[in-house]
Length: 347
Image (tube, rainbow, N blue to C red; front, side):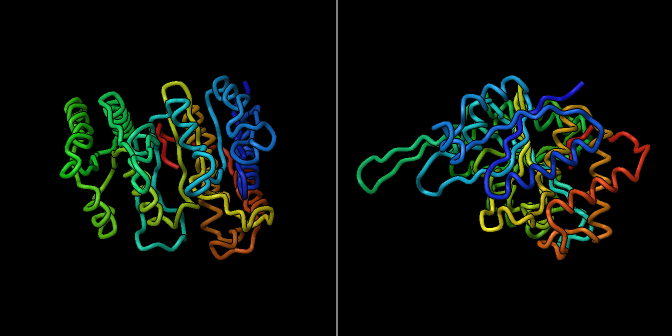
């Protein structure tokens, strides 16, 4: 059986890093049929649409997507492709595991955090207008349905993967109605999972607490904007956005993506680090139930970082994007009989 996957290479370094991930995935021995489509500015040049209908139809058909970075214009231009895809397919759960790789120098070794972010509403609903010249109003939408749904996702994940604590992150001391509703929904769901310790922290204090001691947290549950900011903050604990995977999960489909930028200044030079999209591909394999293949890639990736012979320039090496992928594949081929991984979405 071949897995049909929608591939969105993205722009800038996107095509290079996704190409590396595809090669690593195919080296597992699994069969894939890739349906490849552009999104964003390049798609508009070809289709006069930023998200072509062919891409939409492909995701509806395959139910699984792997995506490279797509640049979003600042203070103008087209809307975020990432946000648009999440809303279109009701990919309500943004899932980002934060775990160290070997020999990447950071202030905090052995970090193991899970960020669960509501993905479809909040300030990212994009409902804003100019009231009068010089005054703009932006609406924050919080609903009971979405808040309950993301809370249940977090607690179900915690139960299945034996996580011990969940903190709901909020600003309900100021936004008493919107964040207050989010907290009420989280509390109601938490009552159904007595084995999991539940807590609540205010978002600004959480940022300080994370920088002081990230080990006090296990899983963080939050609405959209807070999740966007805090997940990037936590990426710094393991070296930056170039090392963390991302998943956007709904009831009927999921898109796995690198969360870093498109880095147009180094595009086409074969020097980009493909680690983030490769780790995102690991989440995709686990979503598909292919735990043994995911473990094989993870072990090989970590071995590349431990041996340090074929690292990319951003982490002190001299290897190119393709050489980095070659090294992972070589380690995969040199090992056999890898035991299946536990049912977890860690990368």
